[in-house]
Image 1: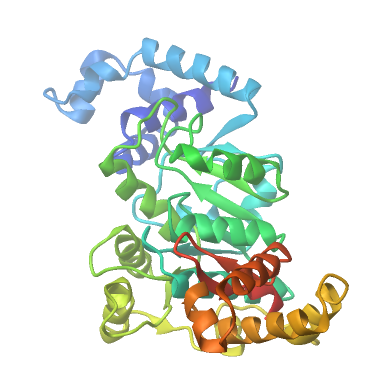
Image 2: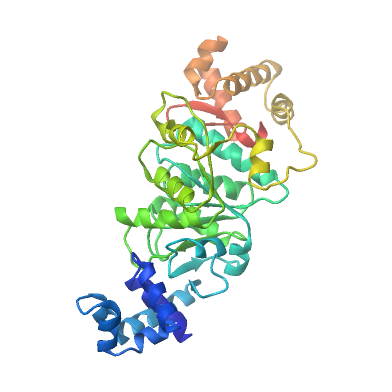
Amino acid sequence: MNDEIIAMCTLGRIFGFKPLYAHAMVNELGSASAVFGLSAGQKAELLGAASKYVTELNDEALERSREELERLQKEGCSFISFLDDDYPALLKECDDPPVGIYYKGTSPAKDTFSRPMISIVGTRDISLYGTEWCRRIISWIAEAKNPPTIVSGMALGVDIVSHRAALEAHIPTIGVMPTGIDDVYPARHRPDASRMVQAEGSALITDYPPCTSPIAINFIRRNRIIAGISPATILIESKVKGGGMITARLASSYGRDLYVLPGRIDDARSAGCNALLREKLAEPITDETSFLEAIGCQRPSRRKESDLMEEIGAKLSGALDSENLQSAKRIAKAIKDERGISMEEIAQKLALPYQDTAMLVRLLESEGFIETDVLQRCSIMVKIV
């Protein structure tokens, strides 16, 4: 194990919340290893006699890092220091870049971080509108000639919708975690994390050492990586105060491009997006062509547009008689026209028996034409619109 990597890893653990201290010492002394070669007096002179860090910069800390990195290496993880060529280039340009990043993925870190990226963030309390448009935006990105990697934070709501949509569209996605690389938070997203680790170009990353718990302050520190690693960030939905807004404002402070999904004036989940538009810090996402051009993606020269009714007819003609097939098409059109309509509302609107409506809705859902939530509200699946 390289001594310089071990020393940088140790500095990352000690100065995780104050990375500028570590960067300043490495710049002053020429290497991370040199920091640990100082005498107690020299450390006190460099950091101040009263600094708690004087006693933490010791051989025991180095040995702990050595053991940690050897264990992580066996588990398929690596540590990429700020001094490594594989370290994300844009993140290195930030005012407070992490000393190093723990990485887990089947693709080499160099390949993963060399791809273009775009960060997507927002509320945990995502609406049907936010879900549909988050997936739709990612579908635009996926169909571009040069799709960027989707970066998000593995949280509930917008984050996990973004990761899953990227995986479904077969484009890479990076999860930036508020825990150590040996954990996933929330635990319910562990299957998604496993898929990401195995997918080409996808990965999990964090600047927190193993066994770090997901306490509140860790999310804020995590957000700066999401904001800094990409040239652009998209805010899907957010209240005026929230983690998504923190990330968006960090991205703006780093000089990154910022885009938001516009929302209703009276919807609290769109208040943050609308505020950024009002402050002229962000651009609204209003159509596919201008958005892809703005983020540097080229539209495909020819894009296939599937007709919903023809798709349903081709897929279900063998399973339904002509009357039920026609009803299924009417139901699909009602859902397409009114996002979030419930099964009961569909039955009333189309004058269909509720049992027949429920049966056809479930069939449309099982075939991938629509999706329903726990309240039986229906939405068209983006990929077939």
